[in-house]
Length: 142
Image (cartoon, rainbow, N blue to C red; front, side):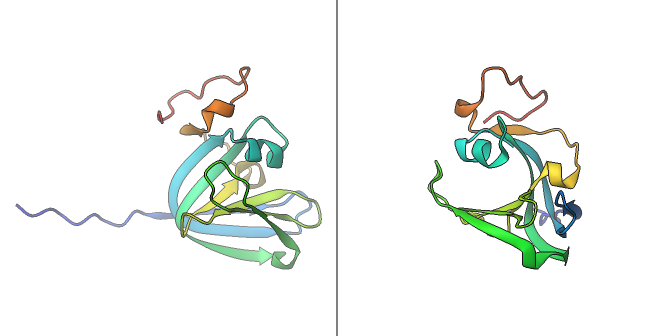
């Protein structure tokens, strides 16, 4: 009996904008859902206890406006050793998206700039999680 070839995963499109609306972008890719990242770098970059991120693979990034004001910080001092390119609006400073050098085609959007309320399916770098942050229900275990 031969195996059936996997059907391609459907692609979705997500939109994002910065606080001052100078940047508007869309990402089309395979939906990998939302995660909470507790790594020290995401805590610092978000100014919060964690970053709520939305992941898309095999992704294509398109700017409706503002590509010229987007700035990039190459975050090379990461726990994994991978360089994470953190993109943000150069006008208002709003974090927009991440590109991880180790995962070609992966685009990670900040859910706040998407106005997305998708519940995270997992947490990353739980060893850095603040004790007062509750558990994410229904999440995958790593």
